[in-house]
Length: 241
Image (cartoon, rainbow, N blue to C red; front, side, top):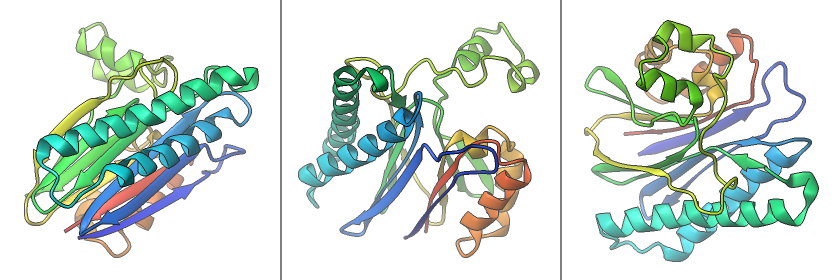
């Protein structure tokens, strides 16, 4: 497997509040994208804390012989650890009150992808000539969409498009979505903040991923987001086989 990560402030924002990291664990890959939220520099602090705590907890509990159940428990407890640290920190300093972050974390071994997600940072899987969004956006608009109260066309420009219903660090206890899915022998896994997915369609992302296997792929996706105006921070993590 190969992996790469990249983040960019974009063309509008004065600060990059995203964080992205990937690391190898005995041939397996853990990749995480976090998109911070909060006033002043609180969003940046939240995403940094989330990445640090999540990787620290995962490293402490990792063994080569982990079962599928063990991986699930470790991934979810790592996200929960990040949640606890951010929640506590935000209540110790009024300037950081209410800060939080999205989080999409993927652990990839030789046959499966294990995903934990909170917020609207996404995971896409490209294999066998198709693209599939693996995560569910925790947003007001997505809830309205699922309830049939708005159409997909209305969702694109809805005023509450970026309003999250769930984020790491905002509540005392967090419940991430979890997914374990098999992956084909050849696949591309993309994790991204909404600096990409919020401005580029799934079809546009798929088109780029079909044209590039690994070399040049992450930069091509970054260029796509920037060509759309770069109106938010953009963070990408890619794992391919």
